[in-house]
Structure formats: structure tokens, C-alpha cells
Image 1 (cartoon, helix red, strand yellow):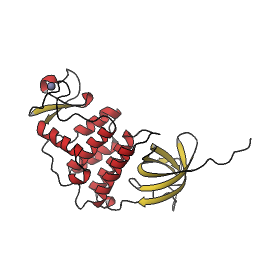
Image 2 (tube, protein in one colour):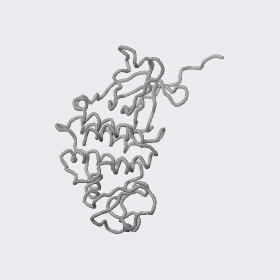
Image 3 (tube, protein in one colour):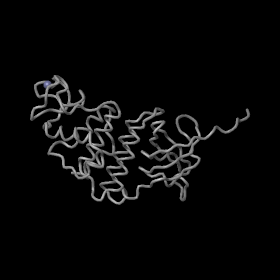
Image 4 (cartoon, protein in one colour):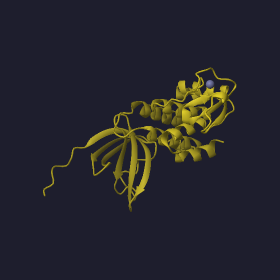
Length: 251
Ligand SMILES: [Zn+2]
């Protein structure tokens, strides 16, 4: 059987959101694109010395030319790194938050669907982290998480009780399974709950609405640092693997 002409290549702007070793010397590179959501490439020979794909580090923005391959993996043809995010790699805390941002936006994005808002959020988060003069505070992370959930269509309710719609009282509960805050008296009999103050929930809601670049010097009132990650894990059905690293570093 004769082979047809090579399939046409596609060029895309993308951000690397995940990498995984494959076989002896290859690597699977997962990226987020504005127009096609999450895309996976097979980078042949990427783990050999002097590979032309070696610039595809996590969080890097690049223009990538690829060719549809077998199954879901596209074959890399050409890579032009546009932003290697050198600043992010100068600090463990910034790198950990960048890795979390990549995993978060990549996991919430769909394959083969336009995801311009998640792409824009990830690009802005990486720009802010890359330029930050100090290590990021929890408000930036909270804003990132809350916006990502919003852009994925599952915005957490933080300004009222999900069950009765009433205004928050000083002591509330956060129930990831039902989508946000509930009064103690309104909490369902079963499920996972976290104690949270109305003040902390209001700060998370403010972070959801604020531009990311304005959150670098914002302090959050005392409260649990991982309720929004619990909402993310409830939506995805799994925790994000980069979350544990981040939690250990920021606390
Ligand atoms: Zn209620």
C-alpha cells in the first residue's frame, strides 16, 4: 500500500502544562492552547542530549508546529520558544506556584475545545510570577484557583449560603460537593465540610474578582488555605499532584 502525502502541519501558540517520560528517550509534552484546549505532543528523542525539544520546559510559552500522528499524540515538527519564564525559575516558591497554575489550568481545560479564558488566566499568572519581586502570597494562589473554577463553569459560591441563599454569618462551612458556602444549620447531613469565617470567604471572593497582578501584596485573613483546591478536586474527581508541594512550601 502506498503512503499518501504527509499530513499538513498545524502551528499553534501554547504553554507547556505537563511533561512525562515516554519509552527510552522520548517525552510526551502536554500544552494548553487558546483555540484547541489541551493538546499532547510526542517529542521524539527529547531526553537525549542536545534535543531540539529541550526548550519545552514547564510553563514555557512557545509557537509549535506539529503534525497529527497516531491516536491523540501529535508529532512535533518545529518549536520556537517565546518566553522561557526565567524569573519563575529563580525561586522555589514561584516555581511551585507556576507548576500548580499549569497543572490546574491544564486539568480544567478540555481537549479539542477553545479555552481562551483558561489560557489567558495561565498566561497572566505566569507573567505575574515571572516579574514578581517577592515570593507570592496566598492571595495570588486563591485568585488563580477561584478564577480557574469560574472559567471552567463551576464558580464557587462565596458570598451567600448555597442552600438557602441567605447572607453569610460569621462562622460558615465550605462544602466542595455542593459548590460553596453553607450555614451550619443548612449543611446537608452527609458530605465533606470545612469551617470557614465569612471574612475569609469574602477575601476569597474579592480575590476571584481582582486582577491577578493586584493580589501580590494582599494579605488574606486567617483561614483554611486549601478550600478552593478541595473544590477543584471535587470537580475533577482527583487532587492535583502539584498541590502537596505548594502547600508544604507556602506554610
Ligand atoms: Zn443557609
